[in-house]
Length: 159
Image (tube, rainbow, N blue to C red):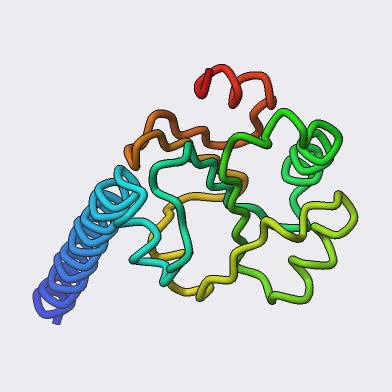
């Protein structure tokens, strides 16, 4: 009886370890795919279903959520300094419902920069939390900021 119990426990442990290993490999594979997609503005926008873009213009793509206090601070700063961004294509995307995202952006006079994307595509394409900022020149990723970033740091990359 004890021998059978030990065999069963051993098989359960081996099964759990195998499942955990498989899950880890899947997550790593998804992260690598995500990192490859965001390297190029065309692949990012195609993956998200965005069509109307000027790939020759320097682009700032920001992934945000209205409940995120870092995102709130960043949008406030961008809204107050929007003239500094006039030579750049600014794209703001969120996984939350369109009306919530637009209501949030209206507070900072940034609603015109909102791009609607499928929430599942967005969260599958960009791994990690919000905020994230991607800066592209000539369609290629120049800098990726994870978390809060000052507008001076964004502009420094583009100048």
